Image (tube, rainbow over the protein chains, first blue to last red):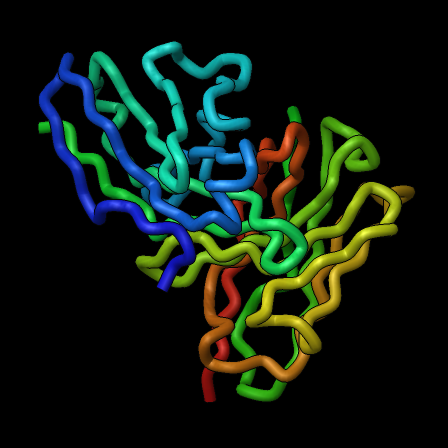
Amino acid sequence: QSALTQPASVSGSPGQSITISCTGTSSDIGTYDLVSWYRQHPGEAPKVIIYGVNKRPSGVSDRFSGSKSGNTASLTISGLLPEDEADYFCCSHAGSSNYWVFGGGTKLTVL
Amino acid sequence: EVQLVESGGGLVQPGGSLRLSCAASGFNIIGYSMNWVRQAPGKGPEWISYIASYSNNIQYGDSVAGRFTISRDNAKNSLYLQMNSLRDEDTAVYYCAADKNWAFEIWGQGAAVTVSS
């Protein structure tokens, strides 16, 4: 069982917006503004799309945005494209006890 | 091209050992903290170990502490993971990942480790 909780699946139509939640505890998301999000296509390594809760690496579309409230972080993807269909994972720093914790992943289907 | 390439994976019996290597090219790992992250089939990633740029801070996840050892050789631009006392539940794809800005910025393609008799 993963340390961070994500919905197993979400879906949306092209052009729509979706939000994926990631729930942790006061020991990880609730304490540290060090939440990152990763996209993983089948057979590939994960790729960072959000870091520091709401920052986008160079080259990542501004259709991706992140936020945090209390112990829950969220990833919003606007203007869904077919290539957004992938698995999405959240990750948070968790201090010296468990350093980094991941979510179990959310499969995004673009209908 | 910036990349990380893992090697050393394979099939090993329970109780056995393996050593994974991760070679960096296109960038210098001395500017990055390095990690090993594994992913079991159909599961989310699991962080297992971290090493700071000059090896002055090393962390392990509870599931591997005491069995796995992380190390790095900045002169060789490489990262290593010595895995001992392997168990069935260690079966996964193992990724090396370079972190900067408190995120895993660069990932390798992964090395498959299967622990089975």
